[in-house]
Length: 531
Image (cartoon, rainbow, N blue to C red; front, side, top):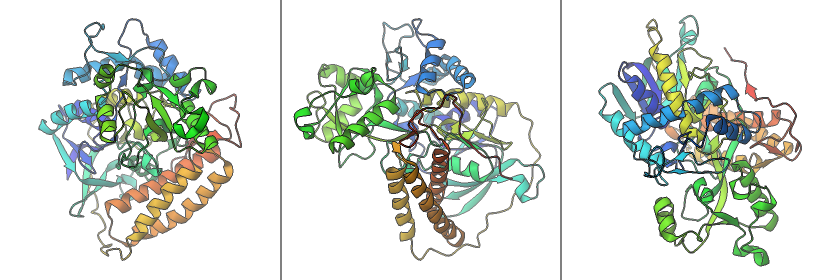
């Protein structure tokens, strides 16, 4: 197959790039499951942007820098924030049904979330990601210049210099049809990785099953630098229930007055608010502070969860602002108009990723990265709520504009995938065993609070698992589960190596052995580029 631009990933970042390019380029979108199965579709809260005269770029930038604990790139932050309104207006023009408010300047309701000094979160009730994705998916499916390959897995990018083609450049991808097993060589003038984060490297996560760090691992294997992989954001409030898998209770619940309290299991302390004792901002503190506070209370008191109580708000208000959260909790027997919501922290967002510039360019010419899979410097040591979807749209447009300006590269013949490995695995239990072991020790050893000894144990286990997984990959027919496991063990290694190299506590990385924050903030960059 041949195309002008191959986009790996079908979330907001990938669809933004595709729709901006489709007027002038032939685009192929590769989605390893269905088009709506990524994390963007799960996003509840909204998109942060300066949309009111009482707000300003400087305030939004300032809030982002504070949340990022000194590690945000100020230039990148300014670029993305200053293009925020333009990004929102583009989404509105596409038909995204944001929640209306006749009294607001722009005509849309703005909410507030932890870490923000102003109401600047535009949203579609409590299912913003779904509203955005459904709208853009319809446009992508109907566009004549966009080809969509669902249930196709991008295995690795192809470098020209590794196939005898001179100077290094990304010239395409190997892509497997998950249903048939057939691997296709896809030739592309430009390739965009928009595969999202790596939450599935942890046992408990708010992320969908697709979040296996595929783009980060592919780019690393292709010789690109990655940065700040130790900063994994744990969302403070994931619904705690045996029948609720990865259901997020939006940041906006606390933004609209939700209070964190100790549950009945805390005995005499039941019903007590605990956040004021941890931070003067209480429930509106940044996510890293709230997640550590919950983790502290749970471990100190031997609890399984804490309560998030917003039952003091009128029922009509809750059903209007949080219809999906209300409905899901009711399905599980929790009436949020009368009862608190049991919550626990869970792995949520990968703040680090593939090093890019403000055009999405990676270290490998012809290869771009956009969205959660990329590291632009916006999120620093802790992502400010609702900045992620903003980054997807702003950088998606910037990457598309840069690609449009590039001359067409010289075509070259690409080798077919090596089909010599046609042996079916005799013990597929190896995949499930390694998958479970990796995610469990990452949760126990590389979680919200870390120690050097636990990180070293994780590093040792990763080395052994990596040997097993790569031996398995080299000798047996590939499957989606095997490819995801291969990517997860690479990403786990990057997270642990990054965490061990940071000799301080900052933002999302908290080490008991190095509890102080160093005076100078420096990103963790793993490289140099391997040729």
